[in-house]
Length: 380
Image (cartoon, rainbow, N blue to C red):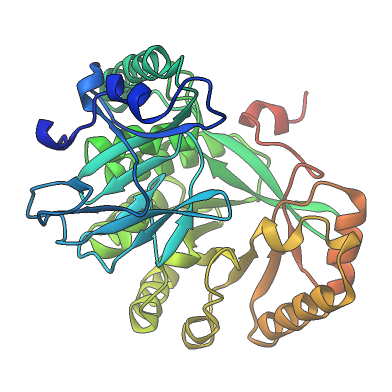
């Protein structure tokens, strides 16, 4: 893993000179993952903070994989925002490529081409100790990740997908989990994978193990499996799905693709064709989280469209205008012959409104939290 050159790092000892401890401010820090010394910490200051290969950038990353002016970090309405400057090899937040700009939060994994950082926000008095402890944890997680991949030590969880008309469970989404320290969640798993350029290998392994564990679930329930965005730009996705189909020849399978990764309708059309030859359906995930790609949706409609939870949350309390817009979007989807799935339903009231809006399927804590397959197997 590449790390910033020492000449471009800002030692934390200089923070006190820039910001007094008594000042009511916090320090944003880029912590290079896998390193355990404060020399590998970069204070994000001043704003805007530019990242790129060329001389003059606030953080210069002299590598051919990094664009001249790769990205900027800016403050907007009190939020730290990353802006990708049409970089060749991409800016990623928690493993997902940024299109335009993206709000950031503490602990986000931020990647510029093959340079990866953990985003920190800390008070000045505790910054050094806290960040050093976190970096040690991250280094341990990377060591753990190698063992996880070798021994396939993942613990897939399953979340029910139900039919809204009668609340019958029709399938389960397979979610990435493990019991290894520092790698318990999907974000942690793919954060570690990105440091080792193993996102695709991890994604393929998770699908395989998820399907294998899913064979114990009540049948005939469909299994929804995920992809990493990088898989769409590399060869091997169809081969991995062939292997999955051979593992579970009679199980309904749906492959989920994140909305932001759907940029070429013709490629999606061809992918859908190849998947249908394997009797595998396709779902577009997180619709509405970024750009509503209606053009791509019409050119290469999926079998299922999963509406992002941001559109669903508190829909029972939403203004009439928002409800009208959502109803129109659902109707467009249904007219295309696509099943509309509402994600992130947490209350009975949200479920009722979604049913009234025409959603076919639903998913969320109200219907069931992600759990190991044993929870869903009837006790004999």
